[in-house]
Length: 496
Image (cartoon, rainbow, N blue to C red; front, side, top):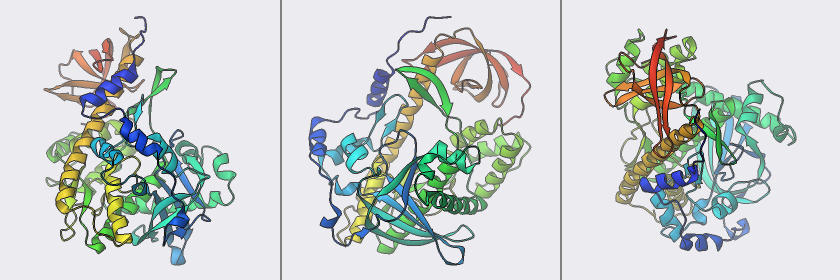
């Protein structure tokens, strides 16, 4: 075995940020500007609803402090569930074209490398004044909608409100409780009536989810592993599990974004949409299904693809995450486009929705801050702060920034994987082939879930083959993990 050497992954992350065109550090002008910001007291604002008495709660990662949204539900007539999603009023603290705004506009998003987080806004703002943390009054824009018994939604209104988060909950704890694998977590049981509130949120989210799935939404579960870092060392790689708590937030945000689009449509404002028009490589998706004895139509069809994925998830759960990853790559990335209010919405193929934007994370994504400014211009009856031409330029730039952030995050996963395996040269692992083309052949280890390139023994390997590989090289600085294939195992199922 090789002796493990210290690798400064934080320095590699900073270099990756700069290489892909991001600013990894806040300039002094931004820090000075943000440190001078004081909280806005709700009494200073007119027409702000006081909703602090409602049982608001958030669900997020255990270490998240930059909370953008919190939720509240109540039962209505005839089986309806009324949902309120409160979004942090970041715009009130980040004036348009300020130094802070220009920095955020350039980076476009927070970048989460698993080693170092590069926030879009300084911590004093995103983890403090504009975060919806418990035990503080928070200025928000509330998005209301109603979930009907069949899972469809009726759009409601948007308005400013003062709220107070009553409980900061954690995905894994709430998810395991809802799934029946653990007791009610104290963060829920210690707050009066919160058990019933979260169960009602769960019911609403499942209605929304089943409705979208019925209409062709894709249930894709990928296996992108995140590094577990302790005292500067990579100890493991873990795959985030899609649980019932995450489904609450996912479904609530999809519905909230649809309501926001409808609100801006009614006001006749241009906006930025989040779209996946049609899969980029549909013919390759058809070929993938055909190799698994499943026929998809020649023209893109979300419902047909959804049926195929549902079948494979049930029949072949071990390889389904790898199939999901293949489909995600063939779908191509989502992108932002400007939309004239007179034009029909383009839609998001994978989500099975026609009215979608990003509006629920203004602490973390600049698109959401733009949408918030558009919404507030309607609420406050002020001139629209952006022209259609402005939004065209912003959409193109922010699409590029999102792609860049994914490249940084993907590179850092590779770098962390190389560090994790650097003292295991020569060891043999079980793996699946995840890519095989002229650009190279790639595998994912079963344990740990590391991806790397096969440098030797690539003959006759196809996506989906189960193989045995030997680790021959790692290079954290370049993000390289290299293997040689030493034999194939009978595949449990071909998936590509």
